[in-house]
Image (cartoon, rainbow, N blue to C red):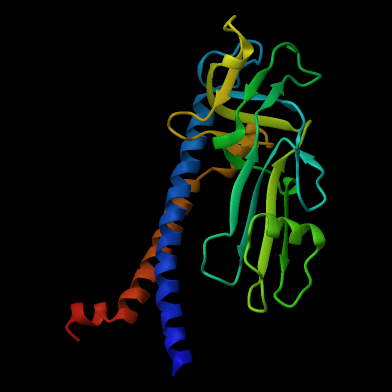
Length: 259
């Protein structure tokens, strides 16, 4: 009896969660469509002549100071990284979901015709779109031993013990020194550069459509082709299925239909 109750509650919560997933899918589609529009409308600027306002830039990423130390996964240093710790078999928010970031410099490629100039990028608020070789993840089943570096990180972040019922995923994505980078953001005066007014800092645009990627603008545009239609169709389908199951399981559908 108790197992049946828990199973029922799981189905109800799962159907509600599916509705939320559908809403997020639609939202992500609009964000990526907005990014595509911004990339199309904004030609890539020269790093030696960046105008204030929304801008698209391409260059080589260099550290602003000492790169960040990545705590696990074999990657020694990164300009910044997003890290998550999540129990994959539980409907819970991630235990850890944070960005460890400082600013970095964007410089012209060594073979660029215009090799002068650089800008500083505040990486804290951008959306990341990184290639697979800039991502790392591992899943630890509940019965498997956890490595020392993962265990030390979990303890430092006060992640609850995994126990015998949680399958846990550790993951991060990062940007490394020397990566070729595309940045779409908003150029503002860099106060750290002094009083000459020549320093440029790139931050997230006011509309929130800023993106940092190690992919070329052409690849980003190709990946976003028809993304809005696909995301809306998938998101609506998820919402309809989730809502229908929720209404039926809770008896609301029968009440409305007069059953």
